[in-house]
Every structure is written in structure tokens, then in C-alpha cells.
Image 1 (cartoon, one colour):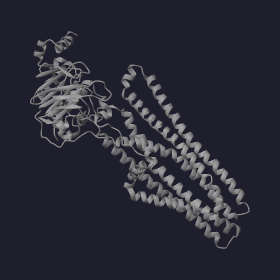
Image 2 (cartoon, one colour; image 1 turned 30 degrees about the vertical axis):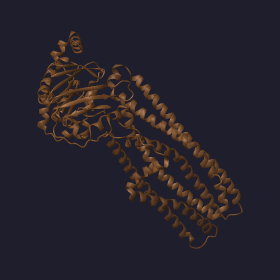
Image 3 (spheres, helix red, strand yellow; image 1 turned 45 degrees about the horizontal axis):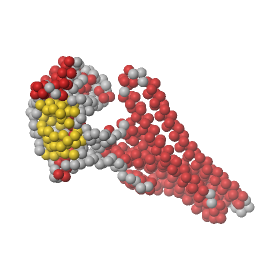
Image 4 (cartoon, one colour; image 1 turned 60 degrees about the vertical axis):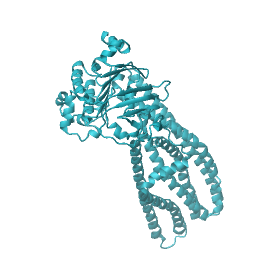
Length: 590
């Protein structure tokens, strides 16, 4: 891949491919269920038998009425009840088999969707998560997948069962009297027209339900995660009112959906009553007792499945909406990784050449035509006011974001030519937003690719980060749980734990974003000594707020509005008496 072809690149927009219609969507969903075709087929066969048993039941009732009660034929006294018992047992068995097998398929489909979604999330670029709340993403794994499962399996199975039942019953009614069946058939187009009219309303409300569930998850998650801030600022009532408003809105939308579905059921009942009245008027004097009982029984049995089909429209529309939400994740474009090269341990030479980075929906670039070189083993400090572009610069090295112009080189190789996984193996990161997991101290230090580290290696990293003494005082030592996001640790302890993780990785390039900001003076001195030793023969890029911690840097870059306005050693910049000198004097005079 030539450098010229990589000179300019823009990340693809994260939009799910357009799905033309519901048919295409359901065919796609069906393919997920068809992965379990043997269980699925058994369920369908049992379903067909179950639907057929309804017609057989009516035929048997006709025989029982005409032959058993009216004609009272000899031998039917025992034979007909046994047939009825056998038919009901068969209904029970086929009902259980179809229901259980379809439930197996449903849970497998749910598992597959959740695994595929999570796998895709791990491949999506950082700006995908920047644009979405964690709560709305989590709701896709819980609410949306369950609704989709209901639509693709249980609701679909019920619709198929009811449809086959309707076909069988109408076929039997035609067999009894086709003219009378036409009277009933007249009302079916009116029912279909009404359902067609209601479908867009159900779909629109289903989207609102989905959105409200995402908002509810987000509100609850934020209030739970921010409990300390909520309490100290007395925001309990505010958070409760915000959550209550979302929940109330969810209730109203759910009831609106229920109202539309209930009206559909009512309309079916009205048309069925009209058809039943006409049937009874016609049947008097034209049918035998058994024929009348069978025909009216068929008509009455038709009402329930037709109502179910009408009601299933709600689940199907909710399922379609959930499917769009899920496939928005599955179809999102992963991180751009066109690299073909794999390098061994990097030396650490870094070069930015005419680099421009601009985030979406921002008027000005975060980095503006930036060019500089960092030599292997050099310690570079980035300083400047907030928003100057320091963190953006660091984020470009492991390619958390894609630049718009220019190129970043590692050991003379364009970073985009290196495989993404291999590129990130060259970096260790400690950010100002410490990310820890609800796990043991050992597993937080030996995280990810470091899982194979020995206890001795973890202890050495902990000692280097000046946290081993604290760990020894814990009841379970390295196996002590630290709570959600390290809530059981102090800010300084969390930061030192993150530093220990970076030390253990032993990468050739260190990225330290305010890595000592939460440490007290004594701890900072110990950690700084450990980090100074660690930085030997390694390329280090340090973002620092405390200027005293980077006085020994080989070079200091002062950033302002995405540009490097000054560069040099501490003494050189102090002599220059420019941006850096003003920052330094302001900090120490304060």
C-alpha cells in the first residue's frame, strides 16, 4: 500500500445498510433460526399436526353428535370416546413438542445475537461509542434482543399455528357447505383492511417504546454510577423525577400500543359476531344437528386464531423495530484495518507529517497540520491548556481515531500499513480516566494479553508502581476484589494500579495521559522514580498538568488550538519566556 494512497482518508459513516422491506428483514432473521433447522423442522411438523387436530376435533364432534347422540349406533359408545381421548392426547403431545422446540430455537437465536453483537462492539471504533450512551447500547442486548426473539420465534410460531388452523377450519367449512362459508369470507377483507391501517401506528409506537427503554436504562445507569455526585449535590429528587418522567412516558406508549392491539381484537369480534348471526339464520332447517354443531364450532374456533393473528401484529412490528436496532450494531463498519505488515518490537521512532484531525460535528480541527519527529527512547512531554489537542495527539498513535489528512509513522512505516492488533501491541497506556474492572487486583494488572503473567511478574509491577505495600495489607492480597470500576480503592490507588498494568505490559512506547494526577506528593515521587526507570530506552509521551513532573523531559511540546506553538527542553523554553514560561510561572506562583 503506497503512502500516497493513504495520504487522505475519512472514516466511513456508521450507518446500517438500508433494509428494503419487512419481507427482507424477516428472511434475514429466518436464516438465524434456520441454523437450528433440525429442531426447527420438528417444531414445524408438530405445529402442522397440532393445527390439523383442530379440524379433526370438529369432525369427531360431528360424528359424536350424529352417530352417538342422534342415531345412537351400537359400538360407538366406547369407540368415539376413545378416539376423543386419543385426539386430545395427540394435541397435548404435539403442542408441547412444537412449543418446547421453538423455545429452544428462540433461546439459541438470543444467544447468537448477543454474542454477535458483543463481538462486533469490540471491533467498532471509539467514535461509535462517543456518539451513543452506554445505557442505550446495553438496552439493545436486553430489551431489543428479547423482543426480537419473541417476534422471530414465539409470535411467528403462533401466527403459523393460527394460520394453519384457520386454513384447516375454513377447508372443513367449505366441505360442509361452501355457500355458507362465503358468508363468513365476506368479512375477512374488512378485517385485513383494518389491520393494514393499524400497522403503521403500531410500528411508530414500537419505535417510541424502544427509545423510552433505552432512555430508562441510560437514566438508571447514570444515577447508579454517579451516586456520590448525586448525594453530595442533593440531586436525589432531580434524578427520581427524571427517571419517573421516562417511566411514565414508557407506560403511556405501552398502553397506546395495547389500546391499538385491543381495538384490533374488538373489531375481529364484531365482524365475527355478524358472520355468526348470518350463519345461524341460514343454517336453521338446512343442517343436521351434527353439521350445525361442527360448522358453528368451526366458526367459533376461527375467532380466537384470527384475534391472535391480529394481536400478533403488535409483536411483529415491535420485532421489526428491534431488528433494525440490532442490525444497526451488527452492520456497523468496524475499525478500518487495511494493514498488512506485522512488526517485531518497535524501536520507537515516531513522526507526524502534516496531520489534521477533526471530530464529527466540531467546527475546528483538533489537530491542525501537525508535523514533528520523536526519536526512539526520547521522553516527550505535552503541555498546554485544556482543549489544545494533547489527548487527540496521543489517541492517534494507537489509531483510536482516523485522521483526515497526513500520516503518522512508526519506525518509518505508516501506521495504517501495520495490522491494528500488532500496532497496539507496541503501546502501553495510562489515561487520566482510569478504567478498572470489577475483578481482582491480579486480574486488573494482568489484563487482556497479560493474563499469562506470573504472580512474581505482577508483584514486581506492583512494587514498581508503589502499590505493593497497600496490596499486602488487603485480606486477600492480589486476589482482593476492587468493586465496580475500582470503587473500593482511592483515586491514587486506582491510578497506581493502572500504572502497574502499563509497567507489566513492557511495551516499547509509553503513553501517559495525566498518569500521576491523582497521586499525593510522596506517592508521586515514588511512582515518578519507577516511571523514570521504566522510561529508559523507551519512547515516552507524557501529557502533564503538573509541570514539575516533566522538567527532566528531553523535549517539551506546548500545544495551543491543535498546533505546536513551542518546542524545546525545560531550560530552553524558560529562556524563551513564551507560552511555557507563562504557564510555569502561573502554576508555581499559585
